[in-house]
Image 1 (cartoon, chains in turn red, purple):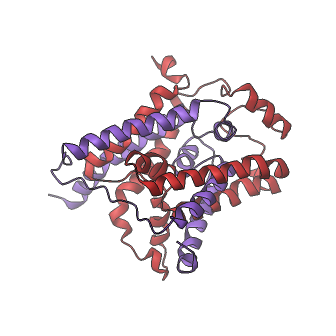
Image 2 (image 1 turned 120 degrees about the horizontal axis):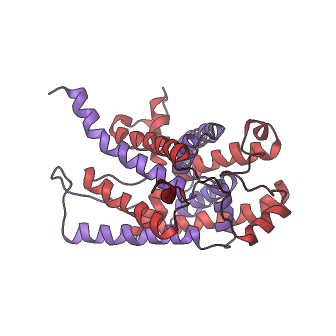
Image 3 (image 1 turned 30 degrees about the vertical axis):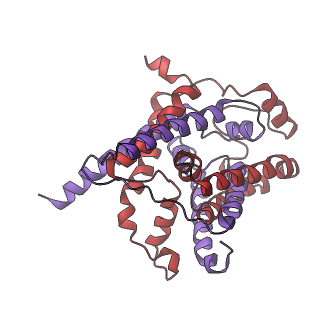
Length: 184
Length: 147
């Protein structure tokens, strides 16, 4: 059993389970699935006079506890359900990434870039720090991230979420095809 | 009844749901930088299958909840606030694009960042701190940005 669930989970198992997060949160307390809202709550914990952060973050405790759970879930999966094999990426992606100088596909992300040594390099700094900054800035500007727009927003057939998801892809394609070839 | 205990009891289901999500996110590899690259290069169905089937299951669930006017477990109304739309939705176009730039660089959106932390990739704390700085900067610039 443990061996079986230690294999990578196929999309048709993982996708529907992730989708069930939306009704689960609604049934538990009419809560919206939206992870990036926590970044705002955390900013609101700081002593700040900025209007946008004058909110009762305690009302968002459930969401902060939810992301604590996400980290714990990651720890549990890494400890007991780890997949010993490299990710079964498509050959086309491996070929493309090799042209960018990434030819090791062990673990979840390229070690040389996503590590303390990597962070000290320009490439790693841009990927981790600039990338992280844009994720936080963009998520709040758009009023949601992948969970809030691409999953719960699209599921509720909201036009703003469709626009945001198109934006996600515009940005993602710019980085993938225009910026990464220069950066890496 | 002890208030503290009841608060903890109220929050426990969300912790469990988060744990389940963290396990799914890890085992389906959606937290992998490589998988995000594969998605933006349109070279595998994996990510599209996950997002597509997640949306389908969530959409059907929301439909059922709305049409049967199902209540929460504690008997309250379930309300899904619509997202505001002004004009052509400038904030969604611009904010979405900025978010996409970041998503492709870090290979992780906010949920996966916390799952990666649990997976022992401690350096992702720097990305989380940067995301907080980005959120804070948005809060400061908000009155000056087109929405």
